[in-house]
Length: 196
Image 1 (tube, rainbow, N blue to C red):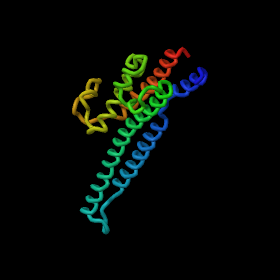
Image 2: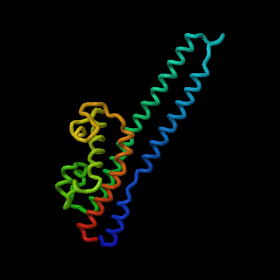
Image 3: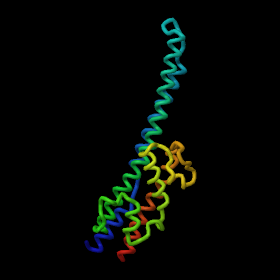
Image 4: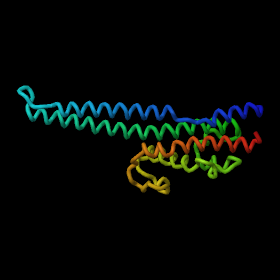
């Protein structure tokens, strides 16, 4: 692979974005907000009359309330999905970058952070965005393995071991820019290591 092509590839990979994940999140939150507003109007508009008894009305209101709760759950699931998608996109990107520039690496092991740390010719823990990447990795693992904060994740501020994973939308907003920085830092480190 020529040096010029290596530069072009690194420049391409360096521009990591997560627009589609934000678009998905915004669509779900927007839909849920509109739906809750419509349900609230429906709830307010209900009045007992000769066709609807007070008991029937109470039952219908309870059903609407349950549906509103479900919308909050959907938003929570979308927050989890955004973290999972962000980390998956990072894994896919890093696999492409590292397998292209370091073909001797075992592709099947590139998901293993310890393998990556000891196999690369530079220290990824010193790169800009590493802490964001690591926190997202640990949130991702906590989502997949029980939905509570793991011991490892609790080493980061704001996370309490064995507590439910909450405020994932805030975590996504806070950490996603660091993931972008991490990918760019890995690309810059490769460029420096290769003398490009």
